[in-house]
Length: 113
Length: 112
Image (tube, rainbow over all chains, first blue to last red):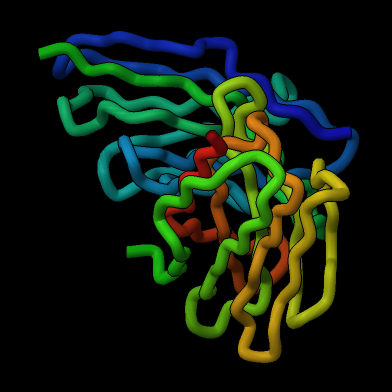
């Protein structure tokens, strides 16, 4: 069975500081991995995805995540955060060929001015 | 704008009632997914439809049902509502298996 663990429920960080949001998954087969962001009172927006190829994937707003198969991780990083990055971030996994996503419990990122 | 439209945005009703939530997927997407987001359960997958047929089932209660119509819009029916059903219900759509899912803004259901 698949599962996703986001160990940090809340991460406060000062503006312009780096941040890492951790995500670990468990699955017995090949997976696809996603990060979604949810701003207050909005739906989830796809931030970035790993389907195949390069293990380092990037988003248009400076976030990146690296797929590490040996550590079953897909941590999200940004070298310098902005106030506008304050949101809840969800890691999700699906097995290749499967249909539904399994989500982690989310990490609330709060950027402090 | 994800292209996925959910109506209504807010719904307030009483225990024992029945409600219908509606979702229009992105143009061209054949798959529709329903999720429930609550404070205690997090984001839970409920059910998926692909081109009108049920494709996958998650933690969906027997009091809940869904369908996808020929025009690909989907409805989630919740009946015999309980206080614990209060949550945000999201619809998502995708072009196929393992394709990224695009989410609507959700319907906030409050049971009084």
